[in-house]
Every structure is written in C-alpha cells, then in structure tokens.
Length: 310
Image (tube, rainbow, N blue to C red; front, side, top):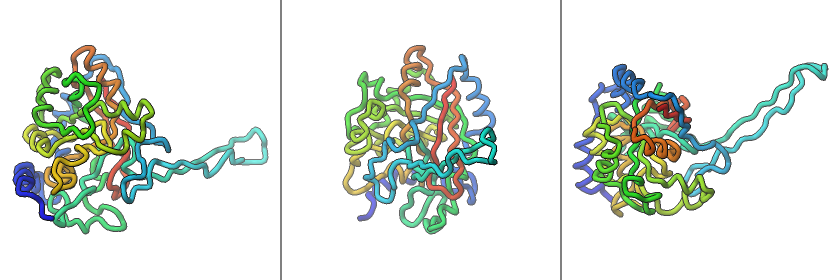
C-alpha cells in the first residue's frame, strides 16, 4: 500500500538529507556544538544525579511480541572462581556473557534501524545494512551524546498519572508541557517526554507495559521537533510513537520521519519518574544530560544508562 500524501508532505518539511554533507551519518546530533555543551553545563545547579535507565535483565519490558527480537537480555556464567594457581589463597576470577537485543531496556535506535522506499537517512541505500550489520548510520556513529536535556512532562501537564493507552501526543500537548517548564527549546537540546507509562513497568505490570495499546507521539510531532532543531528525543514507552497507529494505511510513521527523513535519534524505555518529581518540586525542567549509547560496531541500536544532572 503506498504511503499517503499527508505523510510525504511531512517528509519534505522535516528532511535533512545533505544538510551536514553527503557523507553525514549522525543527523541532528550535529546540532550539539561545543557552545551547546557549555550551555548544558551551566544548567547544573546542585549536582544531584538521576539515573534514567531500567535494569538490563530477564525481567525487562520485552515480552517476545516483536518479530526477530529474542526478548530480554539473558546473562550466564562462563567461569566461576577459576583458580589461578594451586595456592588456596591465590587470586580467582569469575566471568559471564550476555545475549541480548540491542533494543533491550533503555536504548537509542540507530538511524539505520528503519528504512522505506529503499533508503535510510541521508539517502543511503537500505542494502547498506546486511547480515554484517549497518555499514552506514550504525549506533557506533553516534559518538558522545551529551547536551542540555529538557523534560516535557505531558502527563503532569494534563494532571494525570499517565496518558491513556493509545493516546496520540500532539504538538499542542508538547507546547502545553513546555509552559510549566518555563524554558525555551533551543537548537541542540535533547527532549525527554514523559507519558507516565513507565509507572506500569516499575510497579511490576510488565505485560501491560510491554504489550497492547500505548501512548506515544502522533505523526505531527516530528515537524514540531524539526522546527526547534531538537538533537534527539527519548520517552518512557516501549513503542516511542502511539500504538496502535493513528492511521491504518501507515505503520510507524514517526519512526520513518524521525530516523530516516530528519536523521534524529530516538530513545525508548527511559525511566523519567524520579526526575519528573524533582523537576515539579522546584520548577526547573532543564539539566545536563549524559546519554552516550554503547558503541556496538554496525549496531542497529544501543543500550544506554543515561544520567541527568541538575
């Protein structure tokens, strides 16, 4: 089924192909300049740190319902108290290994994660991703990802614990969430958008969090991000965008617009609960954010342990 005209109109408006050169593989992360990082450092007032990651373990949010993904990380021991010598008091060591999807738990998608019409970001051919991984736009091309972070607490702005399942976030919702933050979105910022859905996972309702209808971004949101030159966006849901989709004639339009047309990194399963409470307490919604993914060569995604410093 061909993509609808409305989608193609949005794609033209947010397209960044060639903006940073024909060989660029980092997209909107190019907006994080030295000046942006200095501004980010100035947003640290108290030094209080907030971990935004959820554990990488077998009790993670993956419920085996995504084709091709093996589920949550599986860790096993390979060596246990190996003796370095016959001396009973000598050193011993233990080792383990992990099998996991690179989209497990808290992670960033790489720009090669999705393709359509035979292309990924910047017009590179979809075939640049093969059985060896992503030769173009892999997660290893991200490099260091530190910037000023801004929390847009959509759930709190609507005075709800969490958005309803299947609720599509609109640009108007993002505007409303930015008002209590009393901070303008600037070029190179990384947005963390809270729906409250992570509360389900944290309370032990893994199945409800990982399957079924989910709140998330509607198809008009990428234009809002593009107009403000946002460097990256992460949220506290598994799907990132609304599920089920707003329209039956296109699946994952936000992924296609963000990752392919705009070249903007997407993050999922960020734990924003403690950070949200702290921001609401003192009314400050900007902070220094360190969120560099693990640089898996040719990876289609990368786990990350983000830290917000206020």
